[in-house]
Length: 148
Image 1: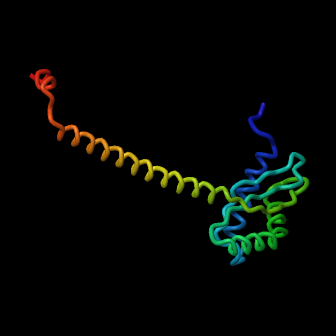
Image 2: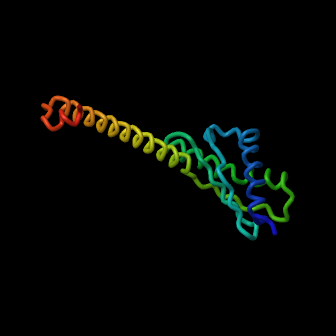
Image 3: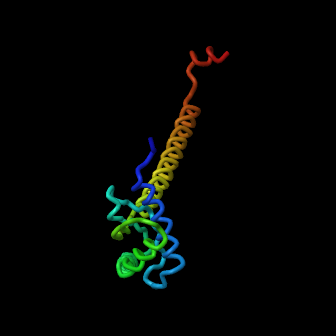
């Protein structure tokens, strides 16, 4: 049995084709730093949800999504010419924030590591202070005999 369905294979193929179309054919300046993260195709192969990640501010993301939506018909026609299917899937674009989420998680982990290092340094300093205090205390007669 196959490891994945036809809709998954078609999604991968559509992802490659749309990425190529965006790089080579689309001239809209609103579509700047767009990355096609994933394409989810329905089981009946009629609908394709394209998850797009856009680097930039919220206004740049909205304008890029508007540019993609305005070019949706052209992109669908190009995909239809490149991929032989009975029906070319209806394409919809959705913003994907997984890159921003992973960057935020990495930032939090880095901050956590710095905090852990700070705590470790404080513990080491406390241990050194404790050792110094023990060294400054006078030695009892019983401890002198144990040392000899």
